[in-house]
Image (cartoon, rainbow, N blue to C red; front, side, top):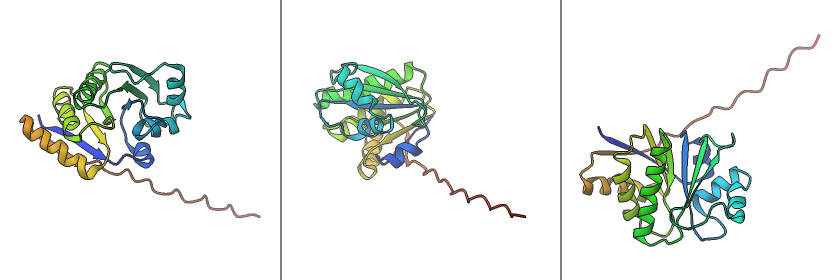
Length: 185
């Protein structure tokens, strides 16, 4: 079976459009939050920031927290993973850990943005290697698509994994025309 990986930009518009059941974001030591954690925090009205302030989630490697999407995200579940050390080895382990946690949680369609700070080729390789056997029906990797797609393709080729990397189809919503005014008698 060929591994299919979709990519999309990391933006509020993409977050609002991506149709997945689970999102995976990495919380590091950087403040204010950046990347996917900041977008999720915005959509969840500060839930990520509150969890950090309460000490419920920390940037320590191996830390994980599950938040409900609360109807504000298409994803019903948001997994936050700690990654305090952006070294290539630690970040790659965090990506593999996230993939395994999503698989164990029964995720079928996942969205993920890699942790900041580590080299993209290392993170792409970690994801492709872990996701190849995870059995996800859909996987969307969010980030800078111009560099993300090629990095994922190179990783798959180097690992000998048959993969198709495509840009996620944009979800288009047509505007609903205003209701026609009822004629008055």
